[in-house]
Image (tube, rainbow, N blue to C red):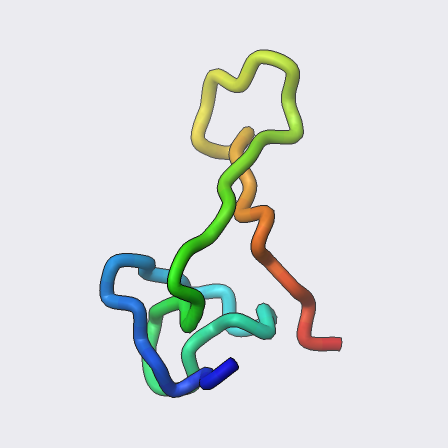
Length: 56
């Protein structure tokens, strides 16, 4: 994956993710998967980017 490609449709500030764009607050993926860790999510904190991959 080319981490220099900014996807202007996906803003992201998680620079500990392998998919974080090297040159800005964007994701380098063409699309992401969003999910939840709750049975009945009611707040934005209950959602997760399931495309996240740790850099370590």
